Image (cartoon, rainbow, N blue to C red):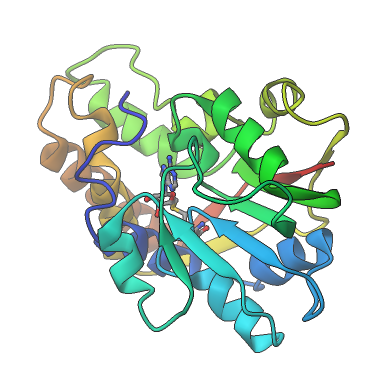
Length: 259
Ligand SMILES: C[S@@+](CC[C@H](N)C(=O)[O-])C[C@H]1O[C@@H](n2cnc3c(N)ncnc32)[C@H](O)[C@@H]1O
């Protein structure tokens, strides 16, 4: 599995396909508000949003009157957040920022794409003020199990026993992330939200587009062409929708609060 293939974040098309699926939550869990509250983000604090992508957290902060610095290694992603200022094009493992620059560092759904996560954690710690807080968001082992089962069934036809080891559920997850962050932070606390995000879709294309968006992570490990996997998943989701009216996907998302 490739952690951060160059095609994945050349622009925000893949991320948008996944955001479209999460837009079908019922009831809606406001993950952005949850993370900002965990980090104590208010207009008085300085914030670095590491791996800001197309700027969803930046927009939520703007709505709170907070102007954070958005940082991403991909210029294409920064272009999609271009309405926001300031933006920084930099790699999390080597931040061109002074020690102690921010009260809050956010790393939402990004650390699992970084090969040298210890170096990135050191940089997050270094750029924080003494009493600052870093909130790192990732997923747990059960994340999107219903959809991953369908992907494994389809891909498994050419690659028996293949498991969809998502970077966020295996490389840096809610289960194994704490030990990785402790290399840089004294205190690391795992927090799970009370509300589990649940998506209910009645359009199979939404699930198929999601699966298509992650193909470059797995295409080298799977014998079947990824587009065939996508079409099988589309048909399987459609069958569930026909018989039950809806296809349900539960998220398993949480965060580490690091000091
Ligand atoms: C799954 S997206 C998350 C975007 C955003 N944080 C969110 O939650 O909506 C991951 C982002 O991390 C960025 N990224 C990956 N590796 C990075 C690195 N080494 N340094 C900075 N950003 C990185 C990607 O370019 C991408 O925009």
